[in-house]
Length: 277
Length: 261
Picture 1 (tube, rainbow over the protein chains, first blue to last red):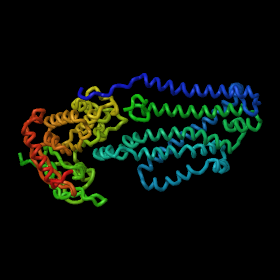
Picture 2: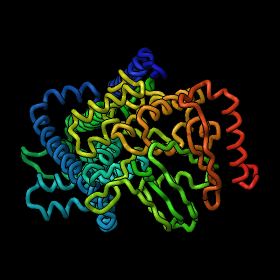
Picture 3: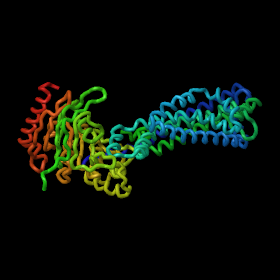
Picture 4: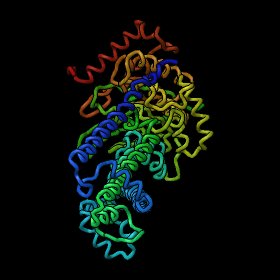
């Protein structure tokens, strides 16, 4: 062999980094929760003002039956909104990359959609759309859509110009250029957009439900928070809040894992600090 | 056999960019099959533009380019049959070595399996056997350039265009790749047009050196190089090599009007 390939990075430093990444925030969280519990007990704060973490945990376990039903509903809206946002964002970004006129005429409207506060238009959507689930879905979609669209558009436009020349040289068809050059180039950008949108879809679903304020058994976590607030069941309110945050974190972690799996072979962003070169 | 026909002749070719810059003016150049031509000149003399014109990546503003031996496609366009090596390796980072090398064949509609078989042959010929599944980021600069060369040659093109391909490599790697390129050329006898700003590299590699001058880019002089059939380290250290380097150096500095640059 003439030139040598770079040797693989030291595994030790990577492992150390992973441990630190998990251990440090966990320790901080335990400290925070401990301090919180202690303060509530020492100062004898009543649970309807501020419940301690242990009380919240107990409530979460006790009310798991009704809370889990709501969690599933919120999850369903979030994922459907995210999927529609991902598909539509991708398709629209591809259209933008194919035709400048489509991009110039549609992009401003995508921006308008993005900058209009969802809290302000959610009531209108809820009035216009009969089905409450669909109106929640639309609200969540509006919030989640733009990061995917704009990121993917940037990604499709960022393909290496020499590679573009190469494809031109070999007389690649538009389809070949799209599938073999533009889409792979855009993948890291699309995934970054998806990670932002995952959190936003959840926020959109929650905000819209707050505005809609629908009750009944088929309501999501936001309504559980509202309802618990009205009834001064503050521990239950906190329990629902914990579920919302946990869901958000889980979505972020899942999408980060997906990004890592798809990009680990080639993209800087998906490599451990150790194997960067 | 009838007298040899040129592969390509350029007559009075000029290129003016939309910005108004005259990149090339009045280029007359005849390229015969099997030639190894170096385009030598300082930056800004239009040598890369000339290469892009030949590749069909841009079209001339004036003058004619004739391909007497080329076929024409259905749209009446010349089938150039070209391999191109850029200054950067220009590999697809998301694809491993074999997928990168097989790309031109697959773009031409070849089945993936057959394309990969042929790609594997060329990967072996550029000394990268065993690295088929490696991703570009795991390779050194010299290895990436080898992949790029394998990809350019996998379609067995009639012409290999190279745009300062080794400029970014260290000297040891560059010498080795120079030797390998000369060897491949001796075996395959494709036509090479090699852009460089190095006098030493051009004399070592080429049979004909086209010295170019800047502002506007034009051909100043052409120097024929005499070298043994087997170019190698012996040639690199011979007095003949040194003498020809001096000749080309003088041609280059007179092309630049004796200006110090």
